[in-house]
Image: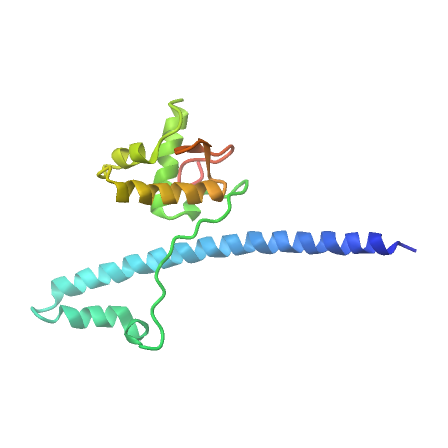
Length: 175
């Protein structure tokens, strides 16, 4: 007859495996959701622009209301804002699950890595992306880079200097 401790260990191991599997599935679903929200936002913007161009003068607000739909006009519930979800990196997870901004950071750091040029600061990233290196832009990039570090996509071996984490591919398509 198995011991009580042995049975508890078996149940704990089974529960841990289930939790890990559910976390992986949740990361995948969050990545899919983020991509779908981004796609939806692009279509909303495109429709709004087309409506503005095609509408006679003074009717562009009607097109915007139609694009926003009843959820945005509702007083009981606000439309959800598209947020960029960054899943925890694991072997085989492609960079394409990330939003364009995060993919851009990965690509820049992958290029540096391929050329053996070392880590980049967020100020250098801002300049490389053609942004003004003002504190607001640099801090926005730093926030994204720190999120990528926390989720295992990037490494920050020296404070403020970012590189790709071990095993992470830099292209959005996973190459």
